[in-house]
Length: 436
Image: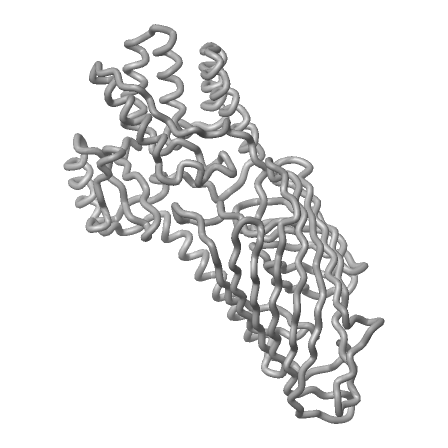
């Protein structure tokens, strides 16, 4: 659209954005040390240790100052220490911190897969060697995976029963999950902890000189995954971004964006997704223009390792225009501008964390095919847009990007569908939010 609107109060919007960012930073710091509510502590009979309720879907294993799991043998001492701290408890270290992404994540998952395969093929020397490499690459691997169980299993099969019993015991008092969060793509592979519980039961029986069969569900061998941030070109929502213990089926967002005439606007989006399809209704308003839209996203292709993805998204929009002005006068009208189009996007990871992403968004009413608004001298159109950029995943909700957008160099950040970048030639901010 080539229309000049009255100035919005941009400084107020940026102050709100800054305040919101500051509050988020404070909230993140506060989560590192929090006051625990004793009523949220529960004993898990299946796992035989105490857990703390984070929300309705998420419990994390409690640990004492020595990072050992809190069970019936040390619970009284834990509560006593906890009371001495005036109910202030160090959250950091209780659960695995996997917000920041590492290039070594892919390698860790690869080696874990090698260990799994070595145990299945009875190459126990290879399995033990791989576990040592895992510990060298990630010091906390024993706390947040079942590597101790795998190690004990290897020694058991080698006939070293006393060594196996000692390591099984270490597994029982140390390990709180089967898969490390750094094994991307496997956060929900054991959602109900069935395999992990089976491993704990077996280890407990073995330590008591009782032999029971180890019953694990049939799972495919762990395959390393390339991590992707939610709504990067070609990709849909990444369930690994959830802090819950169960994957979500829908999300909603309220945010500040720029509308079709580059005016700041307040917007809302709802996103429902399942089995490679997503429905995305959205609404935004700047006071002078209110936009309604609906997009249907289809995951055309995504490789099993998440290395390459392609997405197609047809959409329809309707802009309700209330007022506008040209060089000479202001028009107060209520009229609408409909449009339809489609977006094609794709990404390819060059190495873990670094990908090249591209998209093209086409509108039926574009610069070559304009929409004449009835009873006004104005014509409307939406600018077709293309973007080819490099994306560097730094943490789960933060990605650096740099590339070309509509014949201009841009550099900035991308977070769960929100892009804030700087246009180098036009010398201005680009603020885009798109979940399709």
